[in-house]
Length: 214
Image (cartoon, rainbow, N blue to C red; front, side):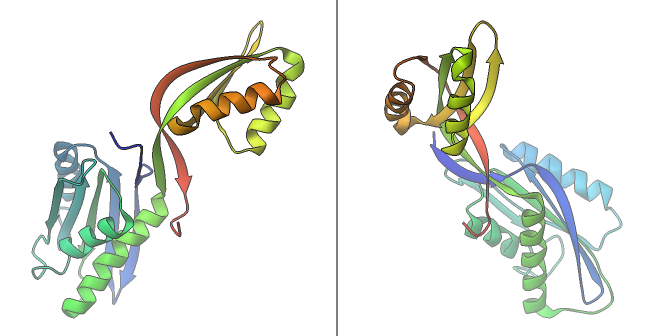
């Protein structure tokens, strides 16, 4: 299991117009090839009157499943350039469909490659990208007089607070990179003069928004 990877934030669409042709980019996180194919068929059904519904997807931690479809555009001018955008951005478990409504002006092979690449990248930017990292849950139990001190320091240090429970004690559910588990616990113990109780919870992938300039 990969400890960290990039994928699309969710599902969405974005439209651009090039030489009077409409290019509508759709992106969705798809974790299986079946999900990707269902998404492609969904868009094709929605835009059954479109000139083309081209698609590309990469599935799996090692990108073992990669598919591209030109859907009637000249070979290599649509699906492959779309797939190349996914590869360049290193997006896993991601499917993209670009719907084209022809505007009457032919773009040529180079123009089509640029158009489908742009439609893909612009749709991805519009929806957003997240980094999914395998992290360990650390549970911090503290008296209420430590609430502000602990919470402020966690946020100042940009630690990922998943939730805070308010009962007899305040319980923080914090996720840290697996490699930092011991150092985090030692830091929290020192910071609070050992006035908190620490325990280790589950491992799970947590998502954090990333800049596309990263």
